[in-house]
Amino acid sequence: MATVPDERVVTRVHLGPADHGRRVSAGELESAEYVSGFKYELIAGRLYVSPQPNAPEGLLETWVRRALERYSDTHPEVVNYVAVKGRVFLPRTRARSEPEPDLAVYADFPLDRPFRQLDWRDVSPVLVVEVLVDGDIAKDLERNPPLYLAVPSIAEYWVVNGAEDPDEPSLIQHRRRGKKWAVATHPFGSTFATPLLPGFALVIDPRA
Image (cartoon, rainbow, N blue to C red; front, side, top):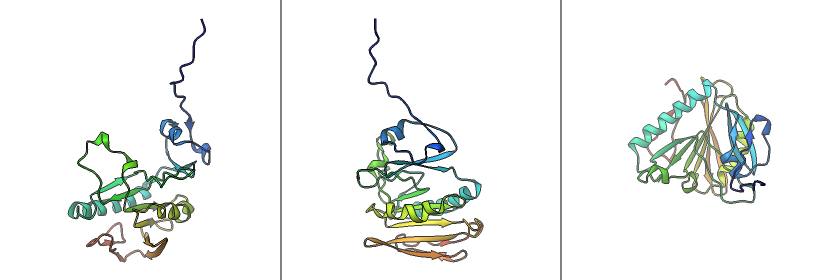
């Protein structure tokens, strides 16, 4: 007797760095099995593969995350959650994009809901942060700005730039000005503040 195929069975795709640039669906991205050690994003309907953070990048990310979390703890009326590796869903387009910033900061994250009811699709950050050390400079400085500008809730996009020297990073601030970003670079050793986060001050020195 012939066996009738079960159409409900989902065939998992296997994805790795060799699949960078491959066209994938959101469903394939969520159900796939992955080669470990890499970060996978859906950008314009295609797979974007980048290495997982190295130690210097991880240290810079921790430095900024802690500063933002301390601010969130004392100013919950401004921002109430700092997510690591959250997903940002762009307004629906024919080719979906779901970038995953190193940090995403939320003003009204529904922390009172049961955790299983929370979904990245239902929330949108006011600030996103990428940390750049050994990664693709074009990803953070060319690819990402128009993506994040397309998300109305995102008022600022920061790049912590340690590409030249992770011990002496700068902070590149993209601040929304209508349909464009106003870009300013804050050098190592300076003190960074922004109206987006009243009372926030960050000395651009991870050892300070």
